[in-house]
Every structure is written in structure tokens, then in C-alpha cells.
Length: 374
Image (tube, rainbow, N blue to C red; front, side, top):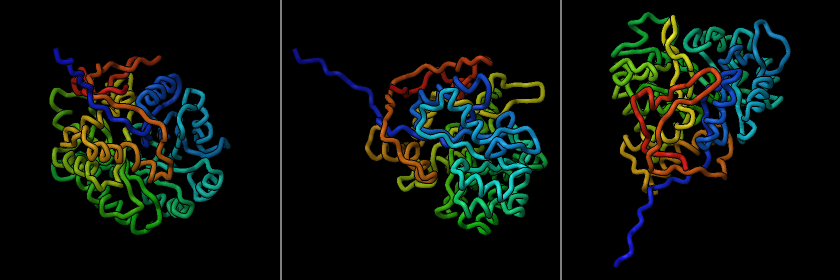
């Protein structure tokens, strides 16, 4: 009798990747969140500074309000298990106390490598943010450009009426990339900028035309879902900022990340944990993708028509997930690898001391993912 043929599930062997936008919060959440990121093949992380208190100074010396320093928060991450990553970048939260002198001193120390702009009260724990013009006028952005510090931008206009904030013709992100970003890039052409978690066709187009000093991070949720998915059944675990947009916006994002010539768009999950998603004052913003982000990105690429079993498809995927982000941040691509296998994986909440955290996949109604990490 002929020997029975054995079929093997398709595999992607990839360099360990950098999640260049993720939230790890503080306290007892740190350890399980860091563990979940390590489990999905991360070589490095960029840990967002909108913690409680925020990371608004470089060194532990006093400040005008209660805040951590980059040094203190980085040490907390290391103590909670982050020492296993090749690199941890903690951006400085731009606030009323940020000065050009702070930027210069921080850059010379090597501790300061990136800064984060939050629109005032525009997202979780963003009450210390100041309008973009504040930093243009006080010399902070000029100092960033001079010292080679990357500016990470939450690109949404703040203080808008509801009709302008989210409408079929315009929204907070579209307004920001049409009105705020062009003069910023023109005034500081040497400033390296990351347009974070872009969600609109307008933002994609701006990034593509802006030149070598502008790149963008893209989340799994903005590649997979639209405002229709969020609204249908009120799937509040899909609620994030920037909001999910429309099909044309998702198509523009997919076209950008799956281009064989893509060098500007890279992985930044914006993974944000909320043990209590619905509160008395509304819905907490953020989708949690710790532990499953590469699988979700693989789903999105397949939905966009990329054959991840082909050499070309695998190269396009690795370019987005593993190479473009480190190149922009001047980090080495990891020599270590992790493996994605085309086999089903059950999705479950992440257990933490503060309660179970529901993942984006569960919030979208999925019980399994088509890929798993070997």
C-alpha cells in the first residue's frame, strides 16, 4: 500500500518584532501585560507614558505636578519582567513642564529617545497635554529636531463639536492631518515624526507624501474592522481612539501596509488593557491585543488578499511587522525568531490581579484565530 501523505500547516518564521506603541499601565497590571507581549514574539516595546501618574520628566527630580520620570518607569518595567526584551523605549509625555532644556539634557543622557504628543483630554489620561502650537512656540519641537528625538503624535484635533469630531465627511483625525500636520512638517523638516495609529485615508495619503522623516504605526483593529463592526451590536470592546472609520479608510490602510514597496508603515498595536471597559461616565477607550497581535495582523493581511504562504507575501508581512519600525527608530532587527503556524487558536481573556481583560478578538465575536504562535 502507498505510504500515507502527511500534510504540514503553513508556517511563517519571522524575526522577533518590536511593538512600537503599547500600553502597560502601572501597578499589578505590569507583570501580566509584559508577559503577554513577550509571549507573542516581541523583541522590544515602546511603552506609552500616559500612566497614572504620567511619565512627564526625564530624571527623578521634582516637577510642578506628580509624575514619573523615564528612568523610574523604565525601572518599574524591568522589575516587572521587561528585562527580557532587547529594548524598551519610554517616550516623554509632553506637558506644561516640558522645556527645550529638558529635551537637550535628556537627549545627551541617552534616556530620552522619543516624546509623545497627546491632544488635551483627547484620550485616556491626556489631561496634561497641551495644544500643538504650545510646543511649536516654546522651542520644544525645535529641540527635538536638533537632538534627533522622535516625536510620536496622537493625530486628532481636540475641542471639536460632535458634528466635526466624527462625520461622514470629516473627523478629528482628518482635520488634524489637513490643518495641523502640514505646517508642522514644513516648519521642522528635520524632525522625525511617527503618525501613530493612523485610521483614515487622509492620514495615509499625508504620510505617503511627507518624505523620509515621517512614518506611521498601524493597529490590528484599524486593519480589521470599521465603524460598522463597532456599531452593529454595540461591540464596545472595539471602541478605541482614534475611532474605527469607514471601509474606504480601511482599504487605504490595507493598501499601504501590504504594498511591496512599503517602508513607512509599521506595527504599533496601541494595545490598551481595561478590566472594566464600561464605566459610569462612558466606555473606556482601547482595544487589548496582548498575546495575539501577530495573529490578528496575519488575519488582516490575508483579508487584504496577501498570500502568506508565498515568499513574496511573507516578505511583505515581515517588512511591516518586523523591519520598518526598527529601521525608523534606528534599532537592529532581531536575530532571534518566532513562528506563526496556520492552525486554529482559541481566544480567551487575560487573567490579571485587577480582573480579566477581554481581547479585541473576543470583543469582535471570535472564538478562535486562524493562526497561532508555535
